[in-house]
Image (tube, rainbow, N blue to C red):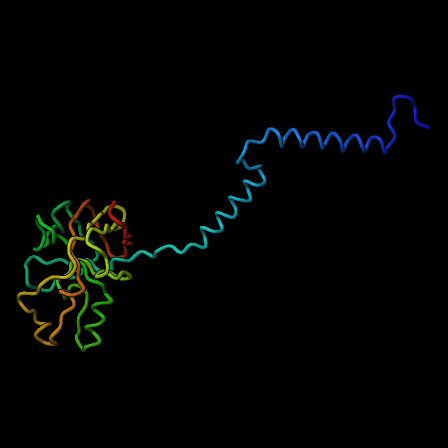
Length: 205
């Protein structure tokens, strides 16, 4: 027997459904256009995070060797570390100074081409300051920014060069990769460069 003012079980369920319905309508009315619910927002963030993981990131290059010489027209001595000075070049290197060709770079992949031709060559033998790997240097546009390690910033100023005095390597095999595949840069921000440093390629802004 249902007492006065006491709801039956069916009436109570029906009332609860109405309350939930009215609450949902109020939430829907108060929801701003374009605003996601907490659950929708979490889902969207999760999807965006997943999408970002799928986007391939350009792999940075590496510094293989830092090569310096006190005089010009000689092979540079390969080493592990060097210091570049802003708008000058490597400290203690004969090719440093004002101008557009303050630092020279050559890829290890280019040196490998000469090795396949029977030459016993390695980092520094083409008088490059930096021997790199993992980057196609000769395809970088002039103006490209190279961020090396934690400090150094270089700007590519020249691709290749004219070889006026044929080096010993050219005279031996009739070809030299430095004039064709080496690049030159000026120092935008100085600092220490060491073997193993990553080289990040950025477009000039």
